[in-house]
Length: 620
Ligand SMILES: Nc1ncnc2c1ncn2[C@@H]1O[C@H](COP(=O)(O)OP(=O)(O)O)[C@@H](O)[C@H]1O
Ligand SMILES: [Mg+2]
Image (cartoon, rainbow, N blue to C red):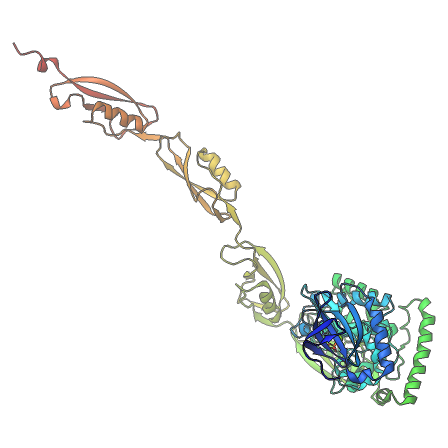
């Protein structure tokens, strides 16, 4: 078969659009399903496999079984058939990155748990239907546009089992995720998938796979015989309980792993609830397999039910038999190689010991010791961490003569509290923790610092402090804004109370006004404005006082109007005058202009009238 071209129609139905990927067994194309008018992914088996009748038979059978898997976390298989001398599978097209791409960008423990859960949900579903994946790896976990993990290629890898495929180049990507039993060419079980999911979790937590090497064989060997470092030794943000869960999934002995996806899921739940307290069964059950394949350490049996005992014994016998068979066939050369490797011994627990005593113990077991001084709240010279971690705390065994690194407390250091004002809480915490402090937080309102950012610390930046101490970050809750209530027209005392109830402080300013004494005339800021809690609102209230206007010389009518307007009740008297210019005009006012009074007070004006002598009666 020549490489198909864009536009080629497969099985009279799927029009190939473009090649989106290529794996060890097949090419994957984006195609249009012309019948249902939707996009699909078409996986076309490489030619050389199509020649192998047995392979094709298995491929078809597995595709058939996997076609029955319908689950939100599984990439559905729609169709399969023959094409141009080879075979194809039509499956759901997932438009998104693979988990491998996401892991590269770094992942929080929370996201790592979340994706692992979704993969476990898919595995649980398939395992219950009797289908084992056998090739679980982040490349086979696609993330759809809703951010959901979708596991592809369920069961299909079986077609490759026992065939030449394990010798092809694609195995490298796969070797990093296969279980020790797969690496040894032994039959796979659902617990092999559990191991692979353990590797995916490990990589999601640390950004690294547990075992790397120059060749697939080198990696496979490590899967069989080497103890992984615990995830927290690579990423200190991984809590102890999660460490233990990942390590248990990676147990060399399938029986020491979680018995199924459900048990794995429960352990993740527990680790999330109590991140600092690993469950005994997760740490106790983990043991590195020795190169001979004899995983059992005396006293390791307790965590298991008696009912499982028989089945396990049967499995163990079968396992030995298989190892022998493989050795005889010369297939498991890597097992033979492993046999020649140095022997592995348990790593003693020296955490909490004085560095002198710890060195003596490790020395006695043939380990070399490296010492790293770390400032710590623990007493000086006490071992606070060791790498690899102790075998009985969930670590594996280590090569005899290898180095154990001890982190030894150099006591608390005295350093200046860094200035974190204005930083986001996450950045502030990182900076303070890097400086060696423990961090707590307290929230406060702030008008100047945006919500979620650090206002200051207690003790303040620059304070010289022992690194074992706690520094409190004051985190802004943002400005606490309140709405100014409307108080115009209220009595001043009522207005002040209303402002106080709204979380504001009122300032009273008095103004003369015709309004009754104490009545609020206006306010600033006005009703409905949003202001910071505790800010001031000025209210202008009436003194109730009014002033007599100057109306002298005005015409009677104009003066009366002016007085009324000012709030007074005018009274008019008449006064004879000899001065013609004063006639009909205001001659005097009482109380006089400028006097203060109250609304309704009487103001009397005298209006000039002509004296009779001067106008009508001539002097005799
Ligand atoms: N259903 C699918 N939808 C979208 N892309 C896919 C799908 N299946 C596979 N791919 C892409 O094709 C590539 C090759 O797939 P595959 O042949 O299964 O090899 P591998 O899984 O080893 O990468 C994948 O890495 C992925 O990017
Ligand atoms: Mg794939």
